[in-house]
Amino acid sequence: MFYGKMKSVCMRYTRDNDQAMDVLQEGFVKVFNNLDRYTGVGSFEGWIRRIMVNLSIDRFRKLKHDFVLLGENDNLENWDIHSNEQEEEKDGDDAIYDITPEQIIDAMQQLSPAYRTVFNLYVFENYSHQDIAEALEISVGTSKSNYAKARKNIRKLLSKSLNLNLTRENE
Amino acid sequence: MNKLYNTFENQLRDKLAGHEMPYEPQHWNDLQSNLRPQGRSSSALIVALLATFTFLGGLGIASYQAINLKSTAKVASSKDLGLESAVVKKSQSKALVTVPSSDSMSEAVKTNTTSNLSMHSVSTENKTQTPVVPNTEINAPTEFANNANPAEATVPLAAENQKKKLAFAPSVSTACAGSEIEFKVTSLPDGVTGNYIWNFGDGKFKAETAPSNIYTKPGHYDVSLSITDDNGRITTTVLNKAIVIVPTPKADFTWHFDNVDPDRPTIKVINTSANASSSEWTMKDGSKMTDINPSIDLLSQGKHMLALQVTNQYGCSNGTVKHISVNSDLNLGAPKAMKIGKDTFMPEALKSNKHNFILTIYDPSGNAVYETSNRSKGWDGSLSGGSQATIGQNYQWRVLIINDLTKEEKYFNGTLNIIP
Image 1 (cartoon, rainbow over the protein chains, first blue to last red):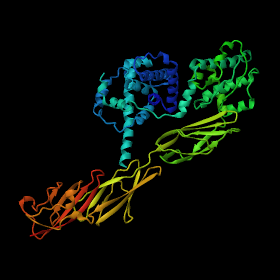
Image 2 (cartoon, rainbow over the protein chains, first blue to last red; image 1 turned 30 degrees about the vertical axis):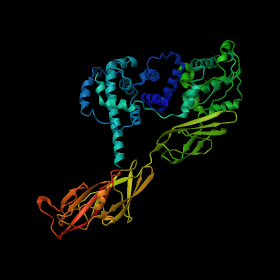
Image 3 (tube, rainbow over the protein chains, first blue to last red; image 1 turned 180 degrees about the vertical axis):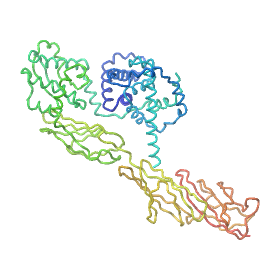
Image 4 (spheres, helix red, strand yellow; image 1 turned 90 degrees about the vertical axis):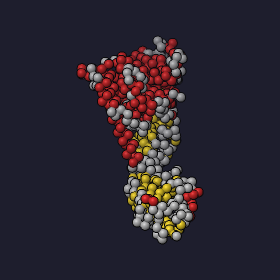
């Protein structure tokens, strides 16, 4: 079944289990009611996943006016993502092999909705910043800056859980 | 875009590729009831019809047959509840809607429950649509929210109606895998009686009033309690992440011999326990240590018992006992003496032993003069610099046998006399 995988997807886009279940429920209702619209192009799982992701995007757009973080000031619009990538190159190969999928999801749930949605679309859905900007009705600059900040936060959160794992092992 | 080469993102993607969350029966039930044949559009229609009732009241003459408003976990949220109760209240006040009993109705509202409410009345304008309505379950609050505006206006009602909720509490909220947790009802709305169904969130259910459950796997568990009375009214409450189950600690350790003094071996113990926060070691003589990786002097020959008890922060513990052999009586069948030029020294037991070993020979001043791990290369009595062992002197030998599987080491030593 797709239940477990889709729940994993929904968990990434939401704050907690309840929200994830709401999206999941709504998504599966959509899936079943639109089964006849599945054209057979692409995998069925991919189709279901797209429905879940699109629902998450819709949800984000609906809530958008709640976010303080969108519509950042102008200098962020020209924010150069590459300079940051180079800066992080030094620790770019840090191993997160000890991190569990649950810890990643947990870290993502701690992000603000804007960071979370942008990060998800960029990393897991392979959206470009242009795609994200269009989907979320934000500027490309905002998408880039939100992504970079989300990435930084995720790394911070994950290294925290990694340290925790290590301490546990050493005890 | 160089994201393909970005290791951090790739690692995240790899980690979550194909990741699945555990299946929760409760949510599957919700989902199934969301997927009744008429699906989304008919639910919207019902909402519209209910709204018509709310506003047109007596003008509306409809034929509703058994609209089941089933309570689910999601319906318990105040907003959704507010809407339902508002609808119910409005309907009640209009004479054309008949409800089984006004008492049961108000009770249902009070206890966050609406189920099997039958409303009978007729509406000419809606007549053509009536076949769609019977026995359709509504339990998608999002659709209420999307389709009916009155939701906002009725929120205060919800607060008023939630004075006494059904509630329960576990004996502990965090426990180790394998622990038994008891559940008790802590708040019971007036008049709610009936059959209890507990869903412990781990796939197990019980029908007792004060049950207990043993959780075997670490994780977060949602627990729900539903009470169904004789009239089929269901009162439900859900405690999200009510129970956190942490892994049980597992005690284990290995050791290796640390020093070169063949008479007084010291072992370094390596603690390989999992999920523990503290360790306690007990020796044969009853002495205790709490170091994580202690060093221990083994002063006598024989088997040294070492017991390890590990505990996690929730008080769950686990123990193991092992025996460390020092120079056991067998003595590896080593010769007590050897003639230089005629014999080579290799304890008999090592020749046929399948484990790895290190044989070290010490001169009378305690310096290592020979070391080998090769069964076929015994000591021939030669010393470094080309000289030979002195006749009449005693040389100490030490053997460590290493168990490849457990990485544990056994320690043997003895004396070799050089004879003419």
